Structure formats: structure tokens, C-alpha cells
Image 1 (cartoon, one colour):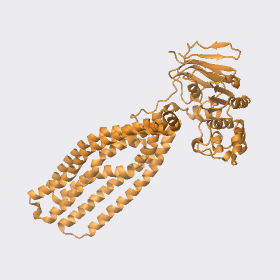
Image 2 (cartoon, rainbow, N blue to C red):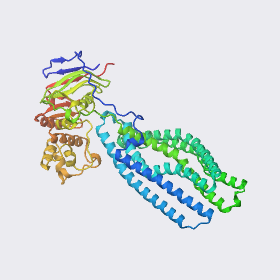
Image 3 (tube, rainbow, N blue to C red):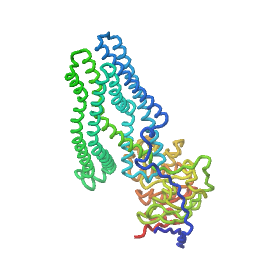
Image 4 (cartoon, rainbow, N blue to C red):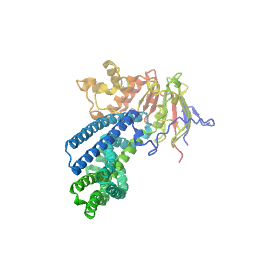
Length: 562
């Protein structure tokens, strides 16, 4: 059980242990569960679905034109007719194929833009608690692999999925016209048998392919961990052992790839047999039925049967293609279905009446239970408690990174779920215990919260954050480059850049979650003095002596019961 004490500086305690009036405000939204989302086409925006339908219709037309060209060729062979009609029909089929293929590539490029935009919108609304290591890896997979695969649907997958089955079926009709119903029925039966063989062969691939994709995600996560934590892994385990965790995941992926390849071997053999089965059957019919007594008619039938058999090689790959497409669809679906916070409808949103923050019987996660507290406007409050007691989680609730499981968090008497995101963002500035510095210049990093800020304002914020020495270190001043993700800065400098960003924003509520942990005591004291002069509500989390911040109240978290 986690309880809350709100303390006065004098040491008198007020324990808010009476939680009889527990308000259960369920303002969270549950995102789409993995695998429960819409179908592949419904993942795409309406305009993209319309383009896909157009491209699909185009491939149907291409199939009809191609079969018409082959029918014209077969009739010309059988009847000894001229080649003009054959050349004309073939030319029309080629032009149509080029046009639809070109349109497919253009549609794929536009589709990629739509998918990235949809994914970005979902991620911007997703609960921050959703971004675990596994989900971060999933996002990387969806952005780097899934979207490129899905953008190939119009030009590649649709072509295979439509032409491969449709051309043989239409050619059966063509065979009926050119060589008679008996030959057409035989060809149809042989094609069905060959297709059945392909389906059976592909079943062996499905399980191994699914495992392979799961291990690919694990390998992505291990690689991401290696890149992010390389410094720690080298110092703790040495250069040779730093790769142990990633190597284990890579080896599992390699084994899965081997199993998938072994499973593909019999499928390949069956595919080869199935691809020649219709043509072999037609040849046997011609031999046993004395069909070669009319060489021209026999040649026309052989041409059509050979073309009808050719797509079976592509059908052999459809299973693998669909497995891959399905896996990437599920990955993308899970990302765009990430659980998001419910945002108030614009005309129903409320504006806070003041800046007082309050917690009413808040319960969240395993450690925060029935917390009540008030943070008066303009006050300085210290959140204290042992590690794991929920201090950062509580700051996240104040910022509405998530909604409480029960109870309410209010700003100015209005529940946060009733305040628009932009309204809340304009009133609260936040500095986390893990400062984020982007690649670029100092000015670009500090201006994130206030893009229109002048150079003088940026310099003032950096100076207030005790970064005057950094400004004088480089002749470019605020326009100096900070390196990739701030690698040109020390840990303490990155923290102060984050503090300068919050100071420049000048929001009326400032949350500092271990924001000075990497600073020496003297620098922390100077920053605390600067913050103390702000006309703002200040909430501080620190494991150091909190007196430097001169808090008026303390929210004491005691953690979960053992």
C-alpha cells in the first residue's frame, strides 16, 4: 500500500489516509489489441484504398489483354493466319502492363507516405508507458521494414496475386476455344492438382516463417540495446563479452533462417513438379490421342498450356510472400493500434480555472494507491520516496503521459482528460531524469518548446541554466553543433540544455524529475535559485538534500508493501 504525506516545512505532518471517497475515473483508452485490428486494406487511408482498387482493376485488364494476345497467337498458329493481329494484341498487352506497373510504383510511393503519416499520428498520441524496449523495436521494424514491404503491394504483390491465378483460368477458356472442351477440362484438372500440391507445400513454410519473424524482432531489440548501451556493456563486460547478448539473439535468428530454408527445400521440389504437370499432361494427351497428326493445332495447344503452367512458379512464392506480408501487416497494425489517451472533443474541452494541481484518490500501477494531495499555484513541492515508489510515474500523471487506473488528476479544478493536449502543454514544462538532446545546434534544441524565441532569449535561458561556459567555448555560440544526440556534451551539460529548454518555455508549472542529478551541488544550487525566482508552480524530484529548492510542501511516497 502506498500512502501519501503532505508535509509543512515546520515538520508538522498531515497524512491523507482517508480514502473512503475513491473516484474511479476511467479516462484511458485501450488501443487496438495485437492481431485484432482491421484487415490489410483497412489499414490504408480511404484515398489509398481507392488507388489500390484502381491498380487491382488495372492488373485484371492486363490479364485479359495478355490472354487475348496468346489466344490470337494460338489461332494464328492453328489457322495459319497473318501476324498483324498477333502483333497488335501483343503490343496493346505490353503497353497496358507498362502503364499499370508504372501506376503501381507511383501508388506505392504515395502509400508509403500515407502509412508513415498514419504511424506518426498514432505514435504522437500513444501512451508513453507503451514504449517498452520490445515496442521500440517493433516501431523500428514497422518503420524500416514493414512500410517498405507494404508500399510494394500495388506494383508487386497485387500483380502476382491477380495475374498468377487469373491468367491460367482465362487460358483454360482460351484452350476451349482453340482446342476444344476436352483439352480445356484436362488442363483445368491438372492446374487444380498442381495448385493443391503448392498449397500443401506452403503449409510447411508457415510455422518456420512465423518463428523467423518473431526472432527477427528479438534480434532488432538486441541490436538496439547494443547500440544504446554499448558504453555500459564495454565497461562492464569488456569488448569481447559486450556482444554476448546480441550474439545470442543473432544466433537464434540464424537458426530460424536455416529451419525456414530446410522447410523450403521440399516445397521447391514440389513446386518444380507442379509447374510442369499441366504441360506434361497435355503432351501425354497429344501422344496417346494422336493429336500430333495435326501439328499446327498441337503446337497451338502446347503454347497455351505452357503459358498456363508458367504462373505456377509464381504461385509457389505466394505463400512465402503472403506470410511475409501478413507478418509486416501485423507489426504495422500493432504500432498504429498503440493504446492512446482519449482526447476531449474540441467543443467539449474545458479551460483550467487557475494552476492548482490536485490528486484525488489516485491509484496507478503496482505502487501508487489512493493518493490525495494538493499543489497550490505558485508553490514549490518536493516529491520524495525510495526508488521504485512511483515518483517519476506521478510526474508522468501530472503531464498526462498516462491516466490513473482510478481517481482523478486535476489542474485548475478541471480533470486533465477534459483539457486539450495543446492547452496542457502550454501550461506545463517538464524536465525528465533522462535528458533528451537532439542532433543539431544548441539553439535548435532549446527552441523546441518555443520555436519563435529570439537569439537573446535562447542565450538568456542557457545562461540561467549555467551554460555560459559552453557558449564561450565555441565561437558559434548558440549555433554550435551538439553532435549526434548531444554526444559533444557531457551528461551535466545535456541536463542543463534540457533545463534551459524548460526555462525558455516559461510555463506556469515546472516539473523537474531528477533534473540536476548529474550536476555538482554548487551548480544545482545556482539553478535552484534561478528556479526559485520564477513566477511558477515548481514540483521537484531529487534524491539529494531538497532544502536547496526550499520546498513549501513534501509529497512522501513510501512504496508498496512487502
